[in-house]
Image (cartoon, rainbow, N blue to C red; front, top):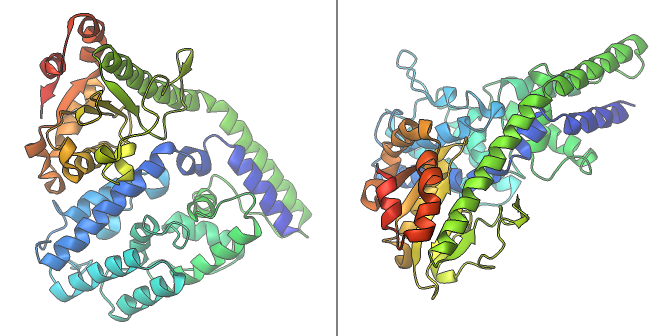
Length: 421
């Protein structure tokens, strides 16, 4: 019976437009961010191995990648707290202790190189045996972005939700408790696989919404009063979701604006005589009377992609008609994290010689210029200054695109309406 009530809860949870399932797990930017976060983790490992990581969290490559995770909607809010240096407690003890720092780097590297639960668990138990102060299961939030089908996210709300559903007694701060919880999540996920996903982010999102109080865990089947109260609570959440539908429509409008800007750049590039590449995950979006990728390249030349999937996710590329160079690259950052777009630009510029000197543009609302500048000042993006990435405000593109299409040639007009960063 409890299996049936949990299945009922999952169905309503998936139908709720404001559940973590819809607001984060099905969020298209979530998948885009996997590549950039994994790249950031690799950079942390590389700096630790080279002895150049330093002894401070602020300004480090770890701050950059953990900050990007913390931006992953509500489920990861506060993910950076566990890594912030607490000087009075001297935790987490991976900044001033070189041996602990190397062990942390070895954990990340080992998990990145392996592909089985047994190998990951072995790496976790080795670092757990070292008893490094303050370095606990919060690291699982990094490992999740390396192996989403083997590792689950971890925070207070997820633990509370798991304990409420299973009657367990999982505690924060202990790796053995985390591993036990993960095994429990895997069992629940397997039982409800048809409703959930191989990606453990889905079941973790359900536990997060239960633990944070949005939903109540199913009560024992034999308690009729509790079952009635639980059904009433489900109805309350359904009513709240309907009342908040306006906010969801606003998010949809944001997505529509992102697509509109891509469409402007597509049409402008075609008018100037370029072939156009639209991000592989946006090609089927509705735009005008057709699809966003109408009239665009069906495939990106291998010489440009350089074997990197992230390059194919760049929002818009202008490619010369002979396919031998990238005339310009554009990342549209309407309301999401700017971090991932910058990483994709770096992959394009540094990954292939054919794009090394291509003009790169971050296209964003006028009020995001300061945020763009802050991101580009991060130490992890020290190479960006050499690439000359420029900021192109929406207002300038909106005002001048038709005139550029009619009278312009080359990239010079875009250089004039964009700003150096």
